[in-house]
Image (cartoon, rainbow, N blue to C red; front, top):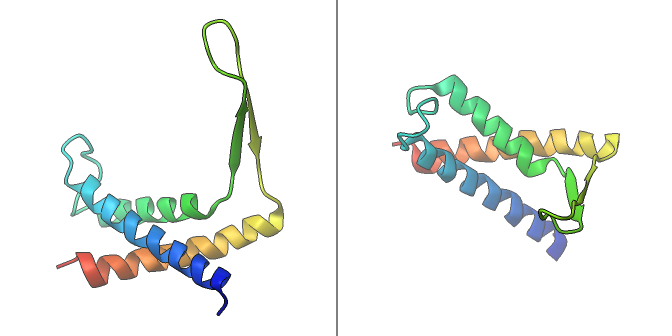
Length: 108
């Protein structure tokens, strides 16, 4: 594997581990009563959503400075169908990494 492939692999593993531990932290917070240790289906849904968001590639850009006197222009760029397909593949991979990290490192 070249350096680019290694960088992508490390990036995906990092997202998977960070997301897993972030979701575990959220489960312990009293201000988020929906996400708890005993809500397996909701937890998996949140994990899949986080996997999608870490893979999606939707880009936003803002021109100008938002203030009381002036406005700003926000541009939302949606990727092509080939990128959306790649997103679906990466989402499945991210979800798998998160499940493996949870079952292998977090769940006692």
